Length: 272
Image (cartoon, rainbow, N blue to C red; front, side, top):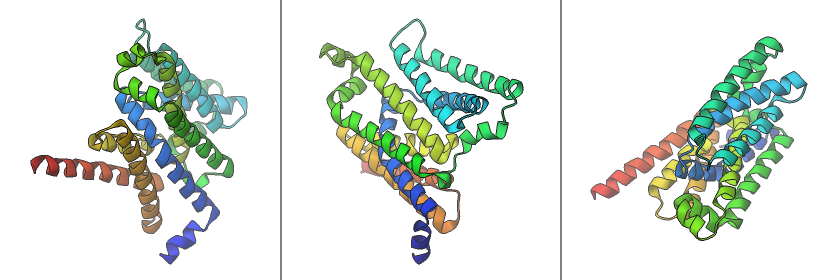
């Protein structure tokens, strides 16, 4: 325990731990949106466009992380604007963005001599490199997510559960969908900075899946998703420090264990 406290007293470790807790408690709410609106593919869109944004950032001489964030936000907005139109379905549009972004990334690597390792560092993430500015970004994004869910709770609930009923009751469904797309894009982009693209699901998706399998109401789903996200991040981080494991992989392992545990408990309850 003393060794754990000593490590947590180090500024890089402390910042990383605080950032993980904030992300786990807030970004996991976005998983409820992803599952409810069947937007699983949007995670991969954000990852691919993040690569292109990083390449553009390096080519123009600014931070690849900033380039990735800005392009992910732009693409999320475009997906939200087109989401309700039938001319091009959301899934088709996501496929276009994924393939096109990856193609343009490799073209830039060849034509603009952009360092490939710097671009693909967006996929890996390094929570221990989280600076004060990054920590502020995590808090700001988390507060925005919380504010939207608190201030537009009724509208979000109606849109996620029954869009047609929401429209009949005067809820601006298209505007709500646009906001949700942008929020999800923001959460995924910031999570890339924390744990890397391959482990975004540990913070955003898996806690929500476990929560939705357990909850009997929208409020319960949000509360449990936040709790499971917090537990996954805290447990994964502490386990990584104690066992000298990679933080992202450890967090993903704990998130998977939470989901498996929830599934086992659900089966026991059904059989009894």
